[in-house]
Length: 98
View (cartoon, rainbow, N blue to C red):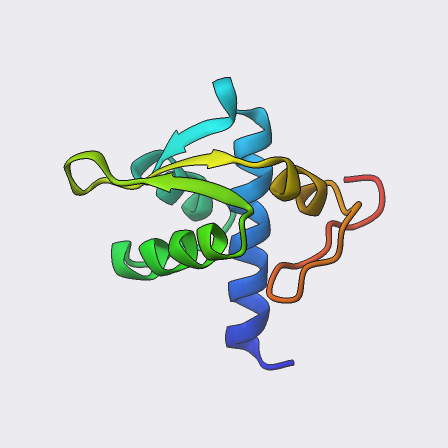
């Protein structure tokens, strides 16, 4: 696995895990961008939107774009992936005990 794929999978896992802790399992792209930066995974808005679109295509989140700003809500499938109960190619698996 190359570094770019590793970072992409890690970003997607961080997004899902942040949504677990969010009220109503929902966050907007601004909060998610800050969360990624805190984890050392800062990316452009375009890259974040691409990740969110991919997660929505995989049915891991429900994405809405009111006013052009992404709002992501975790799905049951996304919850299972974030907890490591389901393996999803393209998303890193959490480490044991996380």
